[in-house]
Length: 534
Ligand SMILES: *[C@@H]1O[C@H](CO)[C@@H](O)[C@H](O)[C@H]1NC(C)=O
Ligand SMILES: *[C@@H]1O[C@H](CO)[C@@H](O)[C@H](O)[C@H]1NC(C)=O
Ligand SMILES: *[C@@H]1O[C@H](CO)[C@@H](O)[C@H](O)[C@H]1NC(C)=O
Image (cartoon, rainbow, N blue to C red; front, side, top):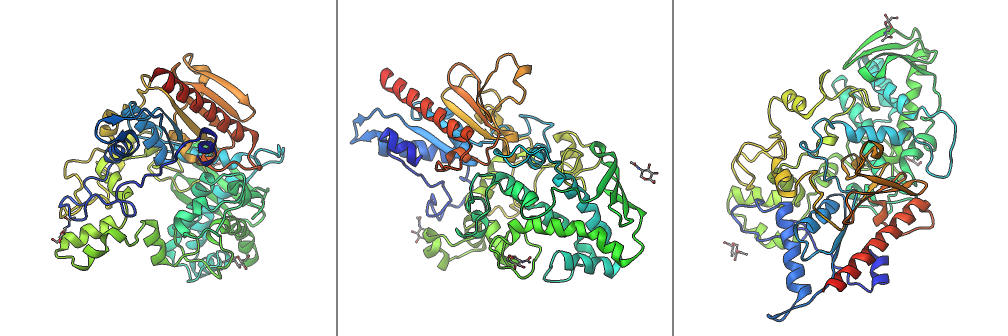
């Protein structure tokens, strides 16, 4: 945006989303967070642009082309902004915008995000090295989780081994095996999102608030190939069928053979000596070194706590995870909090907009719901055998998604009291879901290393869809015309989470630079069209 603004002699305006920072509609509203929603946020933006950029005095409205930009949720807002306010927004660059991640868009795409991570793991160093070397990263990871479960159940010896291998600050208890497994699994989503061609603090910053804590270039590949030997053949052997999660795993020459049948393991062969047990556990040294890229990002940790964010004590991690922070605009009010309702509301407001808008609009991005169903590197499966659709997921949960975060028992937060809209039907009605053909002037850019691309706007197999023309512009970049009114999808093979919105860099692969050029060409065209029609 900074580079484009200069080229177009344009003004850049950043508008703070409501319920973030100091943009609190009113600290006293009795409905508390009821107005935290994408619909209201879009209306704020439209209102601001109209009043402050278009209007001069009371009777003059200036004609000005406005291009919206955004990545991630901001990309969703960008696309929706052009769809909802075409008189105000001339065109939009919606980067890594998962607007097709809702239940009604693709009811069977319940584990699509993790399938993307699986594909990203299976790639080699993009995009310079086209190595033929066999890549074992994802299968070694897959083998590590039953191994952790096995060791955790092998008495004090096994658990001590785990505590030692993973350098845990406090000794692992048997009941914590699943915590250790999720701790190992957590970083891979973030590493995949953070697939930028240069070191970047962008993804970890949200959790660490530390600009100096940077992930290396191509962190997912770095974790497997540079920080650890996880991509190498470590003697792990699978027999059986990975796609139905029924297989046996042999751990080198250690004598350990585990049988995996969905979420159950059986010990088929056990190590006979402590040395053999250590030999089996040696796979986990590589796993630890791989996830250190995330958890030891500041290179100064002496030991690990099982917390979701890098380099944090437990409370810090939780607070930052949910965005707890003080809000300047509320501080005066907070001193005189009268009732429990006000206290509860303040607490909720201090978490920012996201949680509340997910609850208010029932934003169910189902593509991240499931994992371990035989199509990715995770174990154990997150759902019972036979789960294939969102209907199954809901049935497994015993009905709806009224989860704990959206619980508004006392009605303090202003969340809807109606039955939950588990299918995100409101979104489908308000924004049209996949029925976007009547819209125009939006570029949807998708980075194929980024798990959110699973919910992005593009056609995975254009050969099966005669309406879509897919052109490969340069290796690693293709363009799809969704209609002939400049609804366009860009597919960047080596793109992370909205890489195209980052400053240009000499380290960018040609496909990323080319994607930015295309975006610039379309913006120029839209601006010209705007003036010629005005
Ligand atoms: C909020 O309530 C307090 C106390 O009732 C009052 O002094 C203040 O003016 C109110 N603020 C707004 C923005 O309504
Ligand atoms: C796993 O090993 C056991 C014992 O050798 C064998 O009976 C079983 O068929 C194997 N399972 C698979 C899925 O290969
Ligand atoms: C974190 O990184 C530093 C520097 O490489 C290293 O000395 C330390 O042992 C690491 N911490 C853990 C828990 O592995």
